Picture (cartoon, helix red, strand yellow):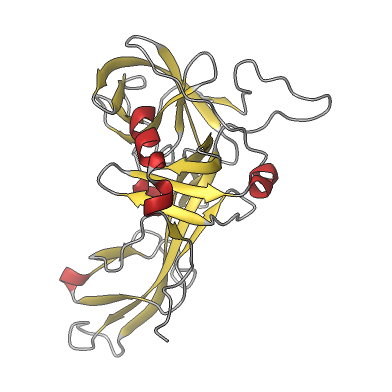
Length: 279
């Protein structure tokens, strides 16, 4: 996920430009949180754990989250997000215990270099969209471009109450908004904010397949914005947020997303929560 925080208070729950809410109803959301989780089995042998009587043997859930937005193209609805939000590794070098309820600390890191053995548990890895836990039907994850396309049904889109954004090109110096579910601290843990949040910024540079934006008040964009839309003043999406530093916020352009979407039927895989067992 992209890191860090804006110093100014963001605008929360703001409707998209030109969106008219029905009487007594909230306008559809621009963005939705996206979660990925996998449980890992962590062990450390007795001879490594000096001074202890027993081996460390725990189950730890690795939870990732970011933001996604709906984009209708090629006769289908795609939920666009960053690949690093949903790409769960088959093997990892370290894992934190922040999601292990049996531990008091959310800071400890288990690492293979320290003698821990970390293996994925037999249970499923999951991708969930929004608070309603919508599942994608097909997925296309391109780690080289850090783009993930998750196909959802029209029925699930309606359940998410999520607007589908039209795409547009953007010009340098344009004022745009980042939309997402940034990290907040709650109960000593980093969790997504409960409401979608927007933050104004300016386009400072255009590169091949990338839109570069100004840093927000000299700070990095908070973690959790990854995969969220970059929206212009007309309510059109012009990019997808990838990563942020104190110098830039980098976004993948919609040209790159459109090109990947053209290959969706050829490259997408059916979404399953566990690998198929050999017959």
